[in-house]
Image (tube, rainbow, N blue to C red; front, side, top):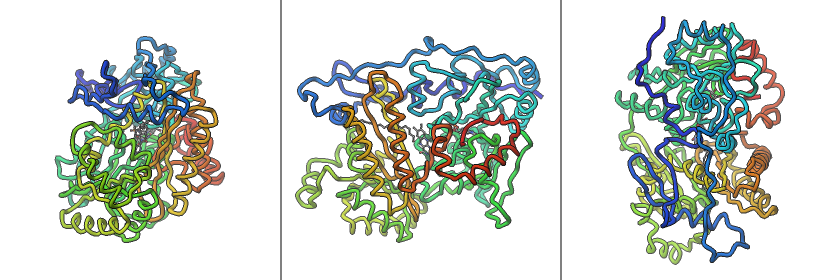
Length: 585
Ligand code: FAD
Ligand code: PL3
């Protein structure tokens, strides 16, 4: 039976930038003639970021550049959507005729915007290509299902007609996870975002059953109305979905307390070409392999996840986030290890290295609490009384959530460890600023691309033993690589998720684009960073998944035996290889 969807529905892909990150109404730009950089958001027309341009100049200038010459940012705008050419969609009348018997016209799209936004994720490789209109393969059709049953129908038809299906959530992956890799078969992108309801909440078991196409804010809004929260807050929270999080083994800011997505998932329904797989609910089972882990992280290559039962927790009574300055990265790491072994674990511990600390200060607005906390008086005190060297200072944001009494106890215990390790408390203002601004950083990337620069990231899980050696070597190797070619470059890192036996170490690196504006620089940097990560026994990714970007390292990372196991699973669930082919391995 066909169900009509409200005609006034504006689909989410129409509200998200096709050639950049996030909300179409939020962007960084230069204010002329004043020359500073400002952030415009739906609520604020232009919020000056007075230090950012100077920071970029300082970090991305060559020693030979004349410091007295005015610093002009080159303009390198993206093409307009009207000017982008995309090959016509393939036709498959027999398949589409059957599809139309079950789906309304409003659920099927093949216009240019739909096809472009369902091809690219948000990696630097994606943004560079889409901005210049380099589109090799795009899906031929986008289907927007409303229910588990509709997904089942769609997968059955795809299996019958040998059609490639690629599930898509928010399209926020940065590993090429949703892009078709050939055009030998008709390809459908399954946009899950109309499946966005919380179906039930069970306050006794503290679980919720959720349609997985829901995006972060809409999910929390529905859960919060019932007094609960999932507690999964990745940097991409505003523009990614529960299905994407499950399919990529995602991790959020507060994972130290609430767990990574695999810890929150109880069960889910997965539609594969050979049938639907269900899982049992329950706290745990020691009855054989934990089958849930076969689907988690499978990136749409084994089937489509439609609904998930997730653990939820009460909306925290208290949520307190504080800022600290450490004299050096080593001091911060020592404090972190002591906190972890004290077994009183904060909800979040983020530690920025000196370079990212400088970026953090440089990208703050002029007014507000953040401007005050680094007042001249504090600086003087830190320098003269505490002997801090500002070149090596590291900012840390530490958060506590839960019942007030628990938060009080955790905070006091952790503060004790911090002060024993030379940390200087900045109070709650930096925590407040972090919470308000935590989704803003990726908008800087679009601004850099608009001005002949690029920025990319690499992240891993690394042991405590290898943490500082990896941090040092990766940064040195990156700087050396670009310095030897006379290209200005910049690199920083932070620790974003902590475990008893290691942490997530996350690098951000930037450079000027070369004259060809190609991806050579990025590809070299990515290779360099990944090789060093693997050398130190790091995970190929802590939370960014595999897609096709990480495939070249996959055999080295997991070993041939496990790749054989995966291949057998793929043959079993998806014998015609219609589910997101050539991703993962
Ligand atoms: P998509 O990008 O649409 O898809 C990702 C993969 O999942 C694809 O292979 C797709 O086929 C598959 N998939 C999607 N839905 C389903 C489904 N229902 N069933 C089966 N397969 C499906 N990641 C983190 O974990 N933590 C972070 O803090 C974080 N920060 C980020 C910040 C930025 C600015 C960006 C651009 C990315 C960030 N990411 C982060 C990466 C990305 O957001 C995650 O990988 C996220 O989980 C992807 O979700 P999505 O809904 O956008 O999935
Ligand atoms: C996935 O986790 C994130 C994908 C993109 C993130 C981009 C981060 C941008 C940071 C901006 C860095 C400014 C660089 C300044 C150069 C001197």
